[in-house]
Length: 169
Image 1 (cartoon, rainbow, N blue to C red):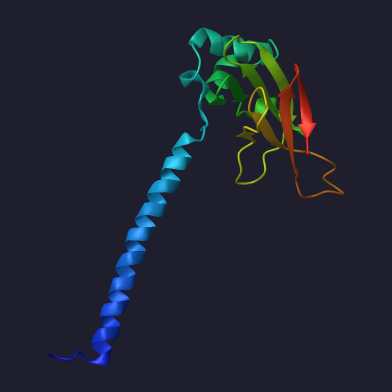
Image 2: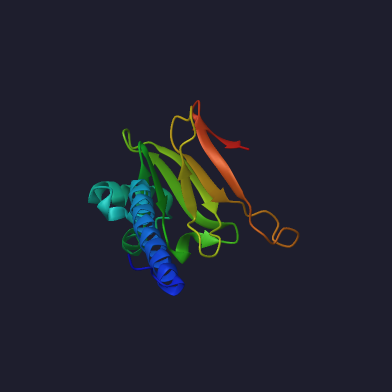
């Protein structure tokens, strides 16, 4: 029987480990993509609601003189379960307190929330979470706070319980 030199044995072991790590990496990345696809994603609002609903949402949340067609074309939505969150994505509906967002119950069309939120750099203006016992997904939004004394934004969790939005710890 022929003995392999130590260098050859080491090369075979490293090759085997490398192949094993590549295969393991493929399984991990496939799993994370599957989890990510279950997450709700922001989409043009026109893809989530009818054109009539879109114009009604814009009319309900803007002044009569606003350029509603422009706002409607910029608006995006995030839907999870029976909750639709609308980010109007326009400077027209932004100010020192943040940018306007609204939330609707999909099954009834009822507007549940209109508020202003700040958008942290590189992060979505709103994220959704589904804690146990919550009627609808909860909203994770950035607090405006006092930017002079609190330069870093913090996030609040708003959950809809018993007909009202409540801040949760």
